[in-house]
Length: 271
Image (cartoon, rainbow, N blue to C red):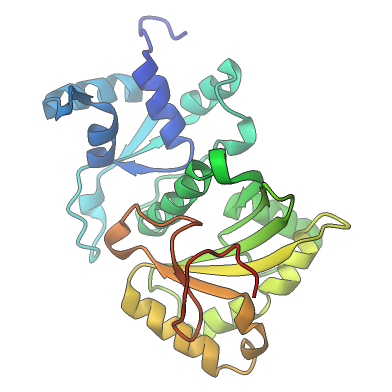
């Protein structure tokens, strides 16, 4: 325990939530600072967050510095070094599930989208599947360096269903900042990357999940994937979705969409 600061169950719940990545102050307020269904006064969460920041447990970024994104939320928080060490030391959760994320004004919008998906992957785990291993961009960059791979996806993870089947996925989150020709070329090499990063002898189905920041951008990528001869052979592997306005509803058991726009109710169905 830290000297001079008593950590509560609420604090540990907040740390576990931030272990997946950054979160808006408004999200943390609604989830952790309420009493009998009513939100506590904002001054209470601000006072507590200042104390946690002072101890190096969490970090903070003001989203108003993010130009052109139209984000109307309050501050953004992330688990800091002391918070990561605390969760690992106390054995609250496996160390491989704790992500160390830098609050960078240039990448925070992209990181928020990615974190939304990661949280939903873990939230659906208890009753539907088991996450065997989840590698984010930093993990993959280290692995790719050893294998001399140049194009790195945002995420790769494998789940084991209750039936014993394995499904592996590469995830690319695009907030509309990648030029379309570059995006298509990147997507085309993902099967090779997946094979290179898979354990020797690994079996199971493989899919490429594309998460976009708006439905209109998703439609543009779907069209580009259909029309490109380098990605056309991979069409059955692609599934698309959008997290419009960084909404938090996306998960593996939500409807996804194929390149032709057809809705897929469950990404674990065959065919």
